[in-house]
Length: 171
Image 1: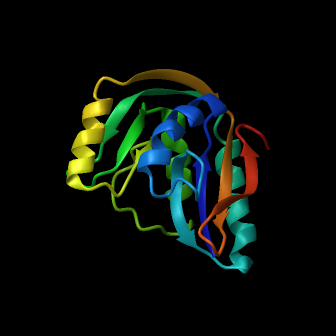
Image 2: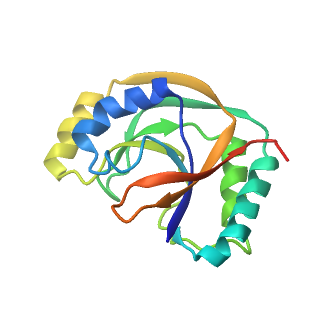
């Protein structure tokens, strides 16, 4: 089964992201807006206890923190994904490192860790140009507190659902 670890932002920020995602994100119906901490990886049911323990440990070692979401950006030329930029925070990096370190399930890390909330993906070059043109002056300027992370699993129909939620800084 496939698993992953994410942060779900507040409803307010999800509403902002979804106003674009419903038109431009092919994964809109499979998962709510999120910040990926650990991309999807395969694991067996037997490995789940260890995985839950590692995610719990990572969460307990990081105190709740603030994230700042600033503007729309793009991963082009690597791909035509458009996202809301989440400013770097030491706590985000700590979570990422803890879940990608030695002894954790390996994921295919294609790019450097760049915290973001995807709002458009799998666009043609023309669509990408058009959407980025519309979003160039979008000033989100949103700040909120993160106090939990979520271990997700993927259902057979491709939809992601929460397996367990972990409070930051809690034992």
